[in-house]
Each structure stands twice: as C-alpha cells, then as structure tokens.
Image (cartoon, rainbow, N blue to C red; front, side, top):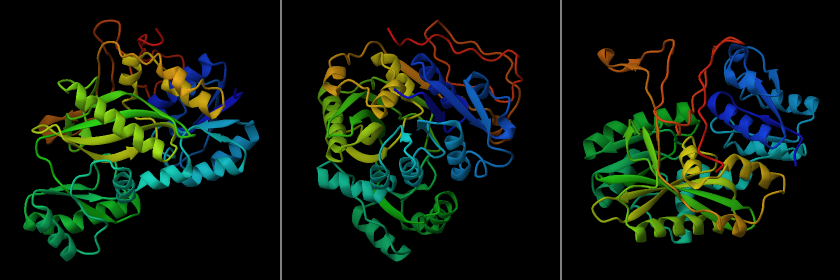
Length: 392
C-alpha cells in the first residue's frame, strides 16, 4: 500500500479523498493556491504545500510545480479527483515516467474517450447503440447538408466539450447557421479545440449514466445507474440512483452495454458511461464516457455501500480484491439523490450571487454533505459532513 498520496485538487473532492486516505492509514498530502490557504481541504490534510500565488493555470494546473513537489516530498501516488488534471493524459505520462502511480485510467483510455467523435467511433465498433450523427464537420455547408439528411432537430456539439459547454439545439437550418460560429468559438476558447459534429436531438430524453469500475485487465463491473435528467443549461441539477421508473430489462441492458464497452478497452479504474434514453420508446443511445470519478459518485456509494475512492487507491496499489469477489457483494439498498444548489439572484436574470453561508440544515441523519468551506479561518467553525451511509 502507498505511504503518501498527493491530492492534485481542491475543495470538496479533496476533502473526500482525504477521508479515505486517512481511513487507510495513508498520508494525505494537499496542495493549494495561496488564495485557498485557509480552505477546509488544507486544514484536513496530513500535509499541505503551497503552489504559490496566481490562477488555477499557475497553481493547480502547473505540472512542473506539482512534479517538483512530488519529488521533494516522496510522493508514491497521485489522486486527481475530478476536473483540473483528472483527464489529462500528459499528466499521467509524467507521473508514470517518474515512477509515481496515477490513481485513474491510462493515457490511452483518456485519449480514446476524451474526444466525443473518437469515443463515438469506438462505441460503434463495439456495437453500442448510437444516435444518428456525423464525424467531425469541416464547414457550415457540410453541417447543413448532414442535418437535412438526419432530420431536425439536431444537436451541434463540440467534440472536446464538457459540463454543458459547446452544445446547441438546432430546430432548423436557420438556427444551425447561427449556432455554427458560436459553438466553434466556445469550443476553441474553453477546450483549445474547435472540432464540432452533429447528433440527432431527442426531445423527450432521459440522461442515464452507468458507474463502471475496471481492473485494467479486461474485466469490469457496473454499480447501477444514475438518472441525471433534471438539468439546467445542460448542467446536472439532480442525480439519483437507482434511476426511477426504468424497466428492469432496460436497466440490465444499459449496464451490460456499459460493461462491454469498458471491457473492450481493458478500462482501468473508475469511469462512467453516459446514455440518452428516449422516453417514448425506452431505446437508449451512447453519449460519452467520463474517464474519472464523477461529482455524483456519492449517490452510488450510498446505495451500494462501497467506497469508490478506496477501490481506486487499492487498484493502483495492486491491493484490490478481484472484481468477481467484489461483485458478489454489490447489492443496492435504498435510494439516493444528490442536488446541486445555485447561489443566484432570480431578480437579476439569475446572475451569480455569492455571499457568506452562515447556516445549513440537512434533514435526517443520512445526508452526505459534498460541500467544503473555502475562505474559512483556521480554528473557526466549518460546515459539518454528516455521517455517510457507508460503510455499513
């Protein structure tokens, strides 16, 4: 087992990873930008080291600074959490070149699934159902011709998009014409990649995702599915598991399909396969793969009574029991919902409205707080994380 693990992240996910590392007797090493010096993830870690002043690009995304710190502090492994460097194949290669274990998928798997059009090609090769769509489009004229063939409405999508950025529903040729430059510009500005493609848009759709864990040797297990259909601006607002009102046959088919796709690439560690499901027919179609831990992994842990972060750490350390052994104990119990809370002012067209959070009350005793207090001073009260349902 590892002695010291660096958490290359901040905030809620950093505190979440720290909890598991300390449970396993591993030294949890935090990093922080100077603006986050008094954050909860810094206070809870066993060690915390500054990355200096500046933006995220200058600190949390500064690979040279992170590698220098790892060498100086005797780091055995890195957990990236989600966001930041969690899906950066160059960072993984840098860790491996230095003999540091990366707690996550391989660089090749990140590259395969990192661009939606290449993930779509692999899904098609593996026999996963796909929405009618295109490869990368060279110009607006090609997009208009393809949309006419597929049939409106369509979704114009950035191949490198994420978090709802770089997506536009187009009901007709005029709206596609207007959206073309906007989506490409957003994609280039946010992801340094302006590649776009088109997929058929399902108006009455559900967004269903399957939690998968692979051993890197061709075996994978699924841990149920999450319904993420309640969205705002293509951002998930409610995530729940098990997905309600889903026929057992469809539930089983979703999980079998996700498992087959991940086994086809000998997927390593935690990942999520996302699908669009047509409410009128219950037919489902491949959407994308997230090669990291999801924000909403907590609801899966609640219902299945597992610690996914522990699985990730143990697999990377070569200390995880076989997936066949783990699968025998994967019995769902109960139901869990995660909600995203927005700090916005409805009287100002829902503009961000940041302020001081002074009191929080969660009903019952099974709520699991995924928030962290940033900016709180050392020794001052902070928001509690209530006792989670796992481990049972």
